[in-house]
Image (cartoon, rainbow, N blue to C red):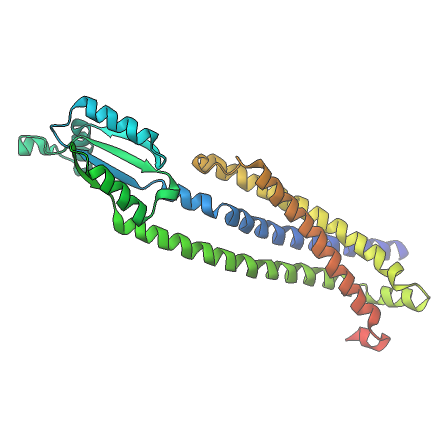
Length: 292
């Protein structure tokens, strides 16, 4: 009978530890995902901004030397990320592929122009700076027109600011929720041992002596939960980097190290504080109140 009871108590204890560790790891994992999003918000915004294309259309009379000079000038400009020359023949092929028929056969000539597709660095992608760049390029005698999607740029800039704000708000709210969830899991775990706490107190054990094993146990659970969460984050980060290599999510090792260390430290700190206050609550309860 005694052995059966011991096995039951052991299973109950293991189940309690497992539930606490699992809840800590899940909450820290989600918090880490949100941290990754916060840290990479600007990188994601820059990635989308750098997809904006400014097209410089050239006059038919433009000489090859002028085109080469313009390409070199654009390549050396601080606002340039990349450039690509598109001949009128290549543009016609692309357009024919898109519409599904050869429009040159219908028209009898190629109305398109030679052009240079310009990708800008993210810091220069806003309506005012692009307008200045376009105006500067338009003054060249061999440039016919500078074209870009102005409404899209304005919308992108506005949405980036809005999304950044909401991500910060969500981060603050989720951090609070994470603390409350972990605190609740630990309090439930200690609640099941409230009679043991009161018994130890009644036989003369000090509050510090009673708290110490509970704090150390839950700190270890917090560490295990944090290790699981960090492992999950590393896996998610690896797969995201495989599918979106252009974002360079694993490039900043220092930033990732700080994030993983923060998740690990958060698991320890929340477990420590939650356990301290949970045990303190039951230590301060009267014996009659333990039943409610």
